[in-house]
Image 1 (cartoon, helix red, strand yellow):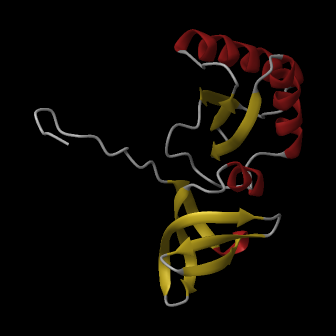
Image 2 (cartoon, rainbow, N blue to C red):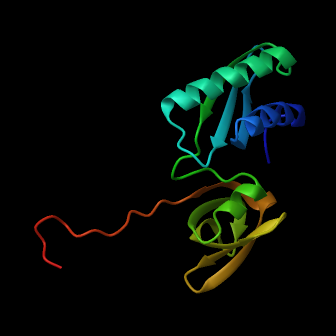
Length: 161
């Protein structure tokens, strides 16, 4: 689940929706004096450096206007990347059919690390196919999870196929 308060999600999401951008994740880290707010965003169009800069400035203005973070903060805005973190059910649902790696707090079927293909995701758990076995894991059991990018197989230069 998110580390950021619901009010923060609502304020930032409303702004981003108007820009046709989705708030994928929000993390509020740090102590009482200085915090770090990480916003991960997605868009149907490319998120280049200029767009990220504009969105960062817009989010900063919104946060200053609504005064939802007490004290100072540093704002980081980025796209999720190829090996995106998975922390919420919505994120798992977006990547069904892709390979992921999961670390669980305690052992599940004798292991804490699980690498496989995400077969399905519900609001409370997901199914991961590892070799020929399908394992159900609850989100409450997960300490970390991310998509695994698999480089496509290519022929080496000079090699005949």
